[in-house]
Image (tube, rainbow, N blue to C red; front, side, top):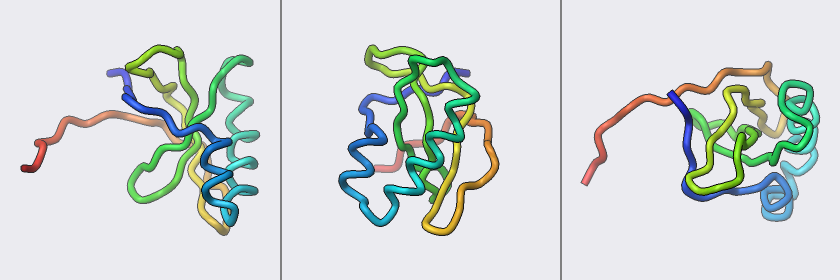
Length: 92
């Protein structure tokens, strides 16, 4: 199953908005670069409460994410993770 985003939040936007996490976001992006195409666009997503750097496999909405992500927090960069989608009910 592919992972889609309607809107993107680029790493550069994240770093501008979160200066305390900017260095970790940059490190996570550099770590992920070895596992994706050279021309990839990097975005920040939230997965299970963690900020994660992911990359786009295309540049058209809805945006498709690659399968690898690099989670990070203020203290460390976590090992590379896989990304899966799960269906859930929308709460009203």
